[in-house]
Image (cartoon, rainbow over all chains, first blue to last red; front, side):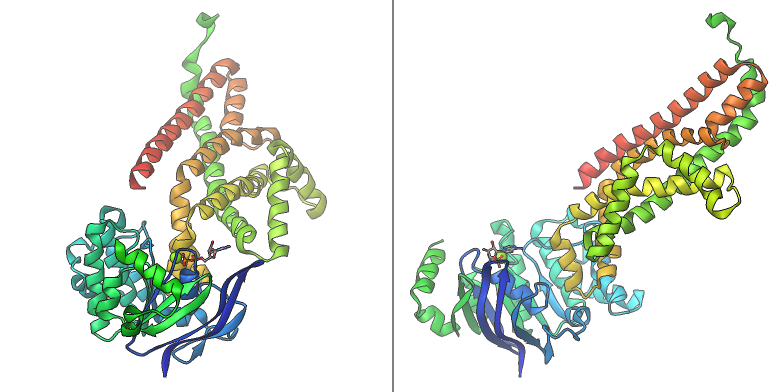
Length: 244
Length: 221
Ligand SMILES: Nc1ncnc2c1ncn2[C@@H]1O[C@H](COP(=O)(O)OP(=O)(O)O)[C@@H](O)[C@H]1O
Ligand SMILES: [Mg+2]
């Protein structure tokens, strides 16, 4: 069974169609990288997966639960789907440990001690235990993004969504974040990752999706994608970003 | 002329003036807390309420902001007895009027504050499984409040100065107390000078606090 099943979704902003009939599946334990030019709809697509963006047509089924179904308890579903954003989105008015525990206690109903213990454990895992009582503004971008990943993991997610997690980072901080993600992937976490880090894709992705103008133009195994993408647009895109 | 001033009347008048000041402060604090609470609800109704609720909140805010406070104070004080048959005490009437009136101004501030919190922050809350109210309470409002703290305090300084208007319905605030003492001792000028100083000291102190907060918030960001 697919963990994430995107079924023919289309989305419009007014007259402008941002997604056109997109379909793909992510199986349990699979890592799927989504790439494509800016404005092609990658963020929109990944936000449809946990219902942060509503869509007009189609459906997304996550672990058997329909996102489009009005009867679905979306907050409950989202609590189990981890999401990491381009700009980290740590809560600036809370300490690092506060960021890690707040949803555990308020959403999952865990006790304060249990949440804290789990939070500290995950901070340790991303190498930031010593920063528990600091505030997000006191950390570097790379550190903040690692905290954001730990925050998502604290909810014991069934899968993780990443929207360009390293594109707002200074180059020297990209690897510390990618390392955490690689480790996650190796542990078998189901991941859908919007990124242009082709090194990451080569290392851990099972499949690569290429989007352009709101459409999934290419959906191939990593080997096939890097071997020879079928579409011209994907070839052009690849040659452009691999030059860097 | 200044030589004729006799400030010795202030000391015996102090206990009475102190009571007036306490009421002015109480009115300020009640209208501030109640106004920020109601104002936040009004702001939420405008931002994320249904069309009917949003229209009501907008109409309320615009109406209150278009009428001079003094008229609201007088109207409320004189109209209520017409409906209830019994006059409401001037103090109680003032507390209700000020809360209702200030809610309109605080709501505009809170609305700007709520909108100052990025969509990304709200999404982060939702992505962690928070409901609308949880994300408001945990993510948005604390940041909105912090971002707007200097403006909220500035509004409160204005509110404190405006409390002197309850003088018109005979509520015993700082100004009224000064007037009464001034009359009793036949030294109105000295008393008015003295309370002017009290108003100034409090407002100046608060505005210093606002400046300090603005600097601190600028650092945090
Ligand atoms: N709220 C919005 N209203 C209107 N258009 C939007 C909105 N959000 C995104 N878009 C448009 O949708 C397209 C896809 O955006 P996005 O999914 O962010 O692309 P990507 O992540 O691939 O860069 C872009 O053309 C963008 O301008
Ligand atoms: Mg994007």
